[in-house]
Length: 149
Image 1 (tube, rainbow, N blue to C red):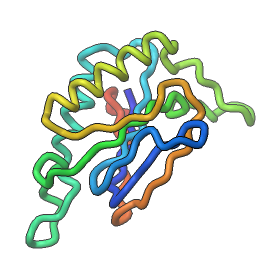
Image 2: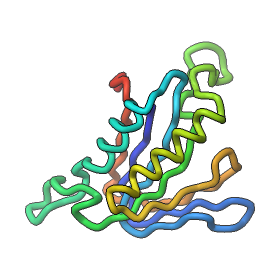
Image 3: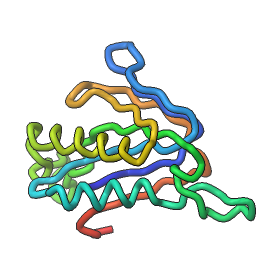
Image 4: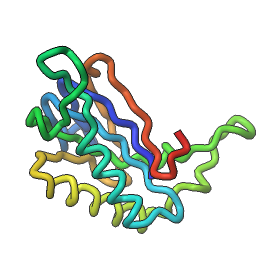
């Protein structure tokens, strides 16, 4: 499982000209599911994201989590995080999970994130989406449940 996590002052996702998800200050999470990902990967990823200390404390250090600051989360499913560009000019998505599996695990991740008491908005699974954000910092992290990076 892979995620790109960005600290934002605001973010939104639009499908067919309609805003389907919008948040204020918090985290934009681009969330990818790989072949072979399990519930253990999901639990690790959601726990990691919910607890990441990406927000500044009174001393200006990143010591507070999205939970600590009452932030929001916009989660967008993103199979292209599994794009392999090592050969040729067209990315291969062979290691991305099939849509049925990815959709189910994505919905479970959203539910688990909401279980932390966080306000979570989402995009529309498998839709063509436009994501807008104002990155705060900028702070952007890559997270992989296999700990490849």
